[in-house]
Amino acid sequence: MVLIRVSTLCSVLEACSSLEVIVLQIAFLTGHGGLKIENKNLKFLQVTFPYYVERFEVNAPSQDVLDIRDIKCESKNNFILTAPNIQFNRNHWVSRCVYRPHISYNVTELVQVHT
Image 1 (tube, helix red, strand yellow):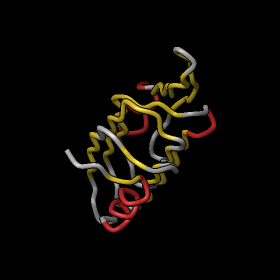
Image 2: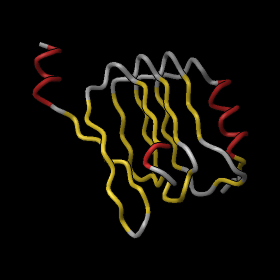
Image 3: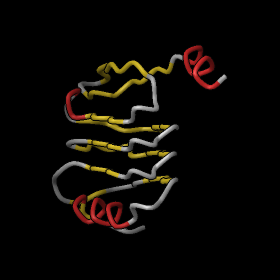
Image 4: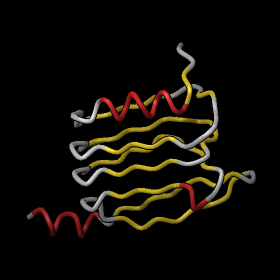
């Protein structure tokens, strides 16, 4: 296990801007701030982070797949996804006073677009 600061992880992800697949299984982050991923080549992102994150922001114009296994944001407005290829509805629900992002895909629309 490696303890890493939020800012350091963001810097590492920024330096790996040519990656098309990112799988993050984060056990613990130190420091304050939000997790930000900006990658014009990213096509697949999977995130597992079972603890609070102040802000989670993804800007990936080429992204086709988003798989959030677990993430907890401090506010419903602090989960930001900019990925034009992903057609989704975003809302949130509260569980034990924790905002949990909920994204639902319209599979019918996706099939029509790709056929």
